[in-house]
Amino acid sequence: MRKDFVKKCPECSGSNLSISSEKGEVICKDCGLVIDDKIVDLGQEWREFDSDSADKKRRTGAPSTYTQFDQGMGTEVGRKSDLYGLGRKNQSKFFRLRKWQYRISTAIERNLKLALAELKRVSSYLKLPKMVEEEAARIYTLAVQRGLVRGRAMESVVAGALYAACRRHEVPRTLEELSEASGVEKKEVGRTYRFITRELSISILPSNPSDYIPRFSSALRLTAKTQSKAVEIIEMAQKQELTSGRGPTGIASAGLYVAALLNGEKRTQREVADVAGVTEVTIRNRYKELLERLDLESEIKKIKKKKRDRD
Image (cartoon, rainbow, N blue to C red; front, side, top):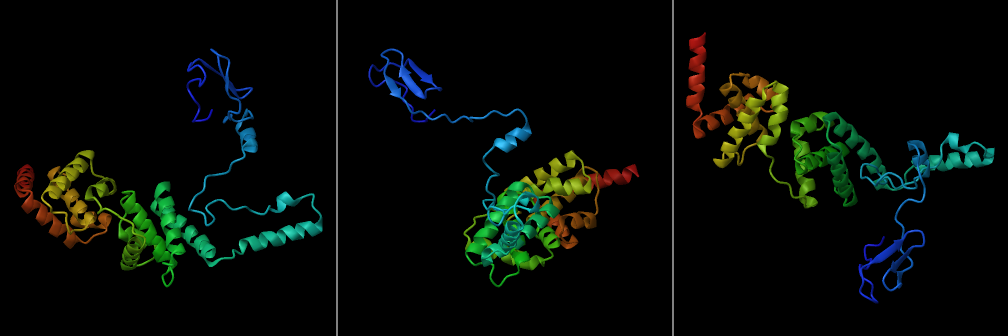
């Protein structure tokens, strides 16, 4: 039934209406006035008894997506198995059409076909969710349409688009991980990311160090108690404005290192640095700042003293 359907009879102002789906009419039961005789039935006109019959009768395809160069809206010339029954002349004609279909005409379409395949590969390697892959494909498509990829390596633009999509959806991935997955240098990925976001006016909030805690904690095999303590330390550091101007992965790794010490799950700075993709010097500097500004040094000393007395 239509959304603009009247709820009252315009003749007698009665609300006792009858809807006949078979005739497509709306009738007032009080005065007999036919209010509408052309209502649209939005239900399906066919029945399905199994998934195979539903697929055959359904007249709509998959939703449009930016992960395909034609957004999934293109058509495809039939394959060899679909051409049986045609004469040899018609078969050769369709083979020729199919070959030319793969020879995509415009430069943008050629670029998208190659780049989106690379984007899917990197996304699969990093195990990114579908929404991030879709957003990255949309960003890359916009960059191609505005001519931002000219003079830049396709792999670096793909990595920059994926990193921007990860930041927008708050999926924690570091530049080091994007660099390793795409084979592009870390500096180049960061440079391309900043260029794309600036030219496309994409507003991205700073990364929250707490977003990295679950993944780092899982890699280091730390308990949930240590993970919660690390988040608590990072929240305290944010209130003290210790996170401003510092890399989120460095703060996250230092907070996790401190939380592990406080809960007796000691991990070396080398182990934490390898998981977080930062240097030991970075962890050591952030670690000292957290101890000094958050008054955690006394707690660390008590724990170390208890451990010595126990030994």
